[in-house]
Length: 115
Image (cartoon, rainbow, N blue to C red; front, side):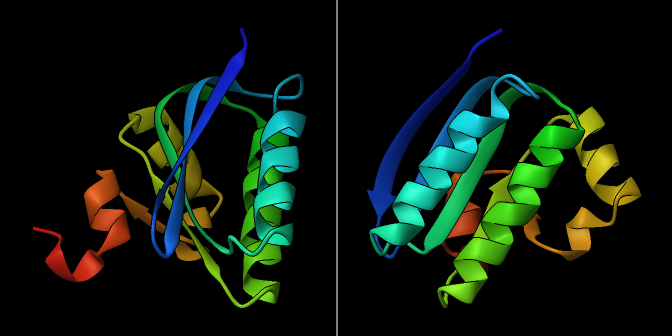
């Protein structure tokens, strides 16, 4: 399955909406998107995984690399996810301690207003 990517800006955050599967075949596309965004100064990223059905170890590696790249540039990465399997994977790999996980984009953009 293909990975669809769209971006939107809600300053200072750039939201990357992903659709499909994040795996060995599609993860390089996300890596390229993140590198391009951070290199052009968009260092605060929200990765919206709400429509991601599957994520393998390559996808996990890209998520970790995204956090590292953004933080080295003085930014941050937040993740939006509602998929129980992905949330379990984040907990098992302790990635839920590496980046904040939210259930909706609005909460990731402004955690102080999260209900």
